[in-house]
Amino acid sequence: MVELARTGFLSPANQKKKEAANKLYNYPTAATLVSTNIRNNTGTTKLLGILWDLDKDVLKCRVCVEDLKIDSNITKRFILAAVQRIFDPLGILCSATLPPKILLQNTWKLKLSWDSTLPDDIVKPFLKWWGEVVKLSDIEIPRHLEINDTTRKCTFLLMPAKRHMQLVYFLEHTLPKV
Image 1 (cartoon, helix red, strand yellow):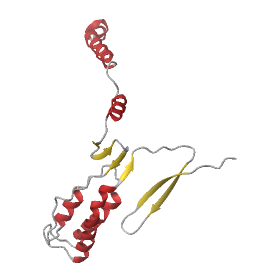
Image 2 (cartoon, rainbow, N blue to C red):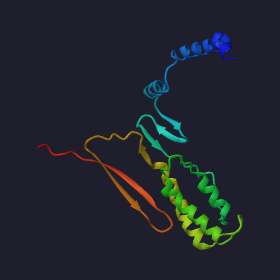
Image 3 (cartoon, one colour):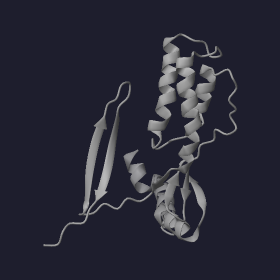
Image 4 (tube, rainbow, N blue to C red):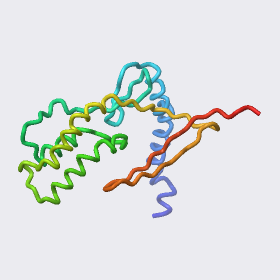
């Protein structure tokens, strides 16, 4: 069997593999295509489900809560539907989406059904959050962060009740000339 493989049993397959590999060299790389598209395009495009403003080179959050109408009966189902409207694949908005998730946890502790009316101590904080959530669309995050010799990284760990977060700041400062 080994002798058969050496004499040409696999030879046609190996030849096809070499031909296919040679053809791949004629195609542009993904990095080339992306940089070409960035230079040639303007406006806004979707990137990982979030908006990328090509003119300003910033990422924007798209919050689609306008079509979800609040009625007088706020339920666990409604809070879940509202939170799930905010798509945040990079975790940029986690500090904004965490409060209603904590409220949902509280509804589980109270053993409330999906469609029962929630108590005021859950409804009031949710309505406050709901009124402010549209402001998330105003957030712009620079896509590119240039880190060099004059950049310092400062990390803070915050641990308020029921949640914790780590904030990383990059400070740009100019060193005095000596």
